[in-house]
Image (cartoon, rainbow, N blue to C red; front, top):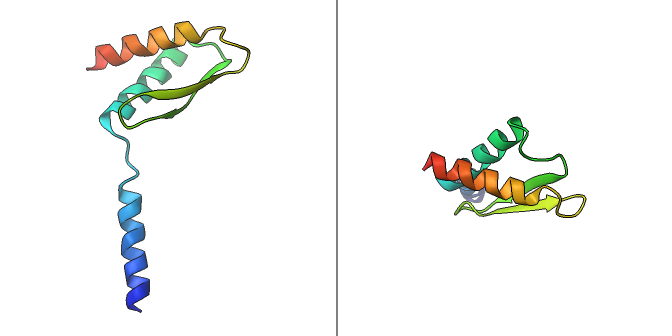
Length: 81
C-alpha cells in the first residue's frame, strides 16, 4: 500500500512540472499571433519550444517562408517582454 501511495504522489508531482515557462508561453503566443496575422505560411510549423523560449520547427517545402516566420516570432517575443 505504501508503494502505491508513493507512486501516486510521484505521478502527481510529475504532472505539476509539465507547465510551460514564461519564455515558452511567449514563444507559443508569438507563433499563434503570427499565424493568425497570416505572416507564417502553411508549410512552416513550430514543433516544440524549449524552456528558454528557443523553438524547433519544420518547413515542409524547403525553407520557403521560414525567414518570415523567424522575423515575426522574434518581433512578437520582443514586444511581449
